[in-house]
Structure formats: C-alpha cells, structure tokens
Length: 258
Image (cartoon, rainbow, N blue to C red):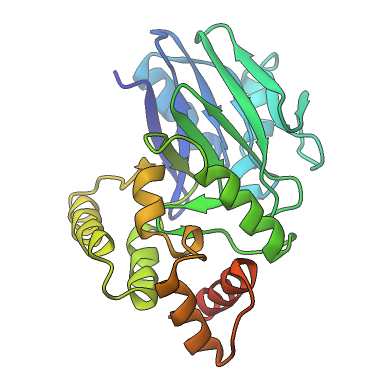
C-alpha cells in the first residue's frame, strides 16, 4: 500500500490519507466530507490517527464533526488563526506535528494568501499545501493580498525540488491551459499537459506534482521570468514594477480566464 493515498470528495477535492509506514493507522488531510472517508477507511483496513487541516474552508473541514462523532478522541490539527470546529491542536509557523502512530513528523509553514491563516505541512519529502499552491496554478486571493500569496509561494518554491506536492484540488489540466496562454512556448508545460490529460482520461489523479516541475511550468512561481513578465505587461497594458505586481496581474488575469 502506498504511504499517501487519496480519497475523492465533491467534484474535484482530494482528501489525503497519509499512512506513512503504518499498516493500521492514517492521518486525514483536509477531510471536507466524512462519507467517502468513512467508506474508504475500513476498505483500506485503516483507522484514523489524526486530522490535519490547512485552512477553514468548508470543502476542507466540513467532514470533521461527523468524523469526531465516530472517533471522538481524534486529534485535530489546524491553523491557530482560523476558526475550525473541533480544532484541538492549533498551530503556527515553525510548529512541529509528531504523528507517533505513523512515525511521521511535519513542520508547519504559514502560507497566507488564499486565507489569512492558511498553513502547510512539510516533511519526509511531502508538502500538503491545501489551496495555496496547485499544480500549474495557485489559489484565489479570498482573504489575503497578492504580496502575501507571492511571499507564500516563494517560500514553498525554496523547498527541495524533489518535494512531492499534494494540493487540495484536481485543477491541473485547466491550470495548464492558462499557463500555456501565459507562456505558449514553454516546452515543459506542453509535455506536462499531454501527461496530465492522459492521466485524467484514465481516471487517475495528476497529483502529486514536484516543486521542480512546478518551478518550470507554473506561472505563479515564475513571476520573475522575463516571458511571464512580458505576457503580464501585455495583458495588463502597462509596465509592472516588480514580481509582486506581475504576480498580481496574472492572478487577476486567471480570475477572469475562461
């Protein structure tokens, strides 16, 4: 059995089932819906050891009350600065989460932008980043600023290139369509689009991605690249002074992209 499994929820959410080397237990990352989790756990022969939340949006935390009804002693980890029902272990930047049943430890990273208190969990070469970083994209700025999101993505992009990126949604193919609108000559993005389309046609997830790949193809991590700056300035119709302004311009562009 793989150390990280996925459960699909709603239209395009992933709930990550993180078992590490355990044969019996798993942590649940962003369980927005309890029903698919409660179906999957006995089928996989696993019991929940913890819940890890990245942010407060209901499609990431809505399943927690029902899961706690079934497993009332389950610890719930999540961002200190967001209101999440059932949260028992509030976290902030640089905290460490020790999941002894799974023999796993994670470092907490503050990555605001999508929401004000959004966090990520990093360890063992895995990054669980919720809705901040998507493959070939990033989250909308619902509560934070462009500068906050740019800083958060810059922080994530500085992690090792072989880090596996587990985000909250299956948006890759649509995101690549936008990425190739920004950088139509990006050969790595064209190759990735073919791979992603084949995976989706086979009913398979495109995730995890890697940070190395994201830095090659994700326009939101490439705001300092001359090709991205040129495209953003052409679309915005103005000169943009720095990479934060470029990021903000392509985020607005993506918000209205169809």
